[in-house]
Image (cartoon, rainbow, N blue to C red; front, side, top):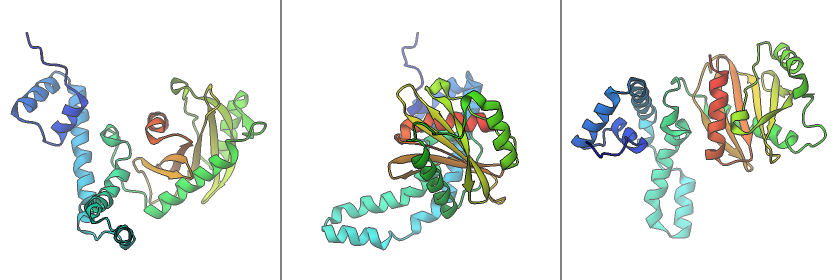
Length: 259
């Protein structure tokens, strides 16, 4: 009877990256043969890995920005030059794969432009900073009138909206409000956990050429923002939380709002 431990996530990632030795690959191949659903997911991982590599390959030939080189020279720390260069070269990949390989099963799509993404994240972060501290009037319409809230905001944005359920992550709907967005009306849904921590989901119309994107992450003044575009609408989940804390909630929102 084999005493080999179960296949780990690290081994699965190594299988995707072709970094296993012969015995390791044989073990993973056998495990995948008995787990067809996971095998399909790993093929998705491999596909996204290849697309990310193709998308960011040109960055390997870019020059490290002058401001980084100047900063390193000023500190007289030449040993950090290689690390700074590596960090710069990896930046695109880290942004593109915000949640790591666990997002690989989501559809790959054209990237949201850097300027548009930054603007979206900033608008969402500002709206969160303005309304989430409010105690008496955090929303225009409360969760006790959810049907009215959804119907009203759907009419204003011109598309049927859905309110994600985040109870599994400890957050309940507080309510929502109408916002002014770049391309017209926008909406904000607010959630709160038992400790009073709040998250907000920002929704707005987006330019038609940005049909769909994967996750991106940004941080504005201590507010973490996961944002993406899907079928003509931009979404951003914001909160004063670390990326790894916000990540599973953002994934839940993404999946609930997907087709």
